[in-house]
Length: 413
Image 1 (cartoon, rainbow, N blue to C red):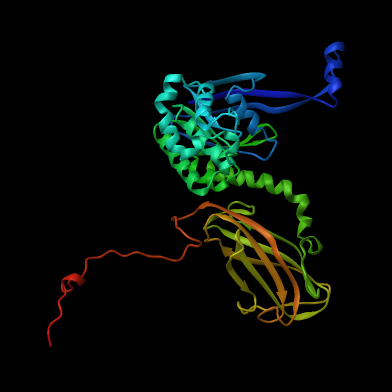
Image 2: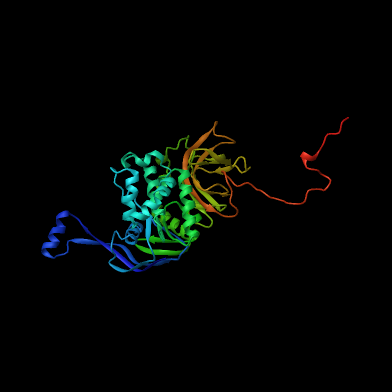
């Protein structure tokens, strides 16, 4: 169990290195105070996974360093039952000149393991890491993914009661990440407490029982993981508000004859109220059009692509039987509403304005990857692959007069 009560941590910020010496000699303050954490209180019960969300600078790293004893709090208390280990900054506690096998000993001792415990678990650590013969090579020859394998394997075999996971897990390959997630779930099922810090919103939704959102060193939300993700997305959306000019034509390499253009656009989920949505959630694609000339045959088209650039879905107003008309100088907001029944991941939306069915004759405006959105977590039943298709299942007894195929025999003619 982890219990944090009224935790505060601040740092002195000096404008010049010499100001530190002047303050020490004169006793006069020459620094600004940065409050990294302000009156933080929360708890993590045995067998519970708590997610921690927050933009860069919100206080996540400071919180983890306080929990691991790297930093001491200014005030407040930290209570942890049993040993706490974690996968924080990649390579922490490792010596690049030592072999992987030697680093198991060094890192294990730093985590509080005895020499006897290390020897008893050494082979299990090596087997889990799947490093093979590389275990006897210097760590400086390892890739970041190999180092992460070793770090996670040592940390999870240190028999902790509390486990901290930071973004370091994201450097591994997909297969090993899944293996780590499985082991984390096993640790949770065994009664372990987990603090999971990540920008992977899908992982937070899938793994965490609840989550907190840090903003400016304070907890702005503590509750259900889905609601915490929505709160985090609202914070990020507010931060990005002043950058919405990135949608302007000249900034994104749009091209076309320019009789009509898209001057602004956004994607908003019904539940999240942001551009990060849950698979199965309805979302609105809002596009502001402005016409330079009068046009009575305008087609607005969109194409959704995944992170590999594959076309996922495309449609346009001509195919929907809804051609658009704009007068010269007119500005109009068009909303396209669709259900995001697609797999978790990051997607882009290409937008085009042209005449009739396609852009080959009259291309007024075209911009690749004009908008971006992310799908995290599932609403409704889970599925595999790219998209969710309508599916039903009926189970009923087979007719008695129908024999199984292997029981049927051909009758000679």
